[in-house]
Length: 110
Image (cartoon, rainbow, N blue to C red; front, side, top):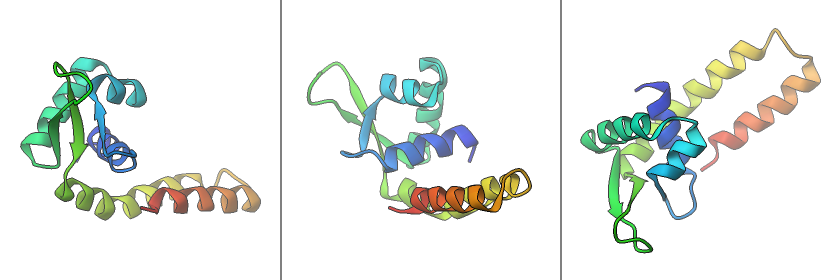
């Protein structure tokens, strides 16, 4: 799974209501609509995400993580946060690393 695809799934898995419009995903990930559309299409094809009708706007769709996608996020999250921790270990003081570790632990929370 690409970093961008993981970011989209992680974002969706932490979203209250479990779904976002493509434009919201693009804004939050800093990707273009075209780029996010390709990622979402691939995630939907792999059954990691799904399109749902937007009840507020009948012309729009919302994107939601599926149970399979949630499982992928939970499996990948420890490796992702571990990689980030490893990259920071030599650059910060012990106190800064403790604060960062706490932040990473919060990312791993459901």
